Amino acid sequence: MGAVSADIKFAPTSITKTISSGTISAVINFQVNNTEALPVLVTFSETLDPVEGSWTLPSSTIINNGSSVSFSATLSGISSDFIGPIISNIKVENITHSLLDNLPVTINVTAPQEI
Image (tube, rainbow, N blue to C red; front, top):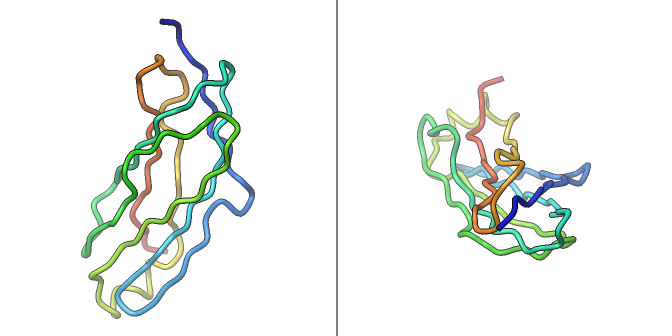
């Protein structure tokens, strides 16, 4: 069982955000490419706990090599007073760049940060 090089490539418009009362939603688009053309198990987790509210994240998914996928994440239960200063920064990071055949790549959805 050798190492698999996995590269998560993001489209230029990798994240779109919508904001409504009490909810911030992000749609995340990315493509999986790896040198051995194997499917990759992608899981999602938070890197930061939101100040208030809670994330709804997708479950783990196996993505075929070369496939483009789109997932959504929603931060809900936040007060309207809190929405104003945190609109800016929802991001996605590729945490694991080299992996064994059965080791997941983790995509982290971070909580919004104050501007």
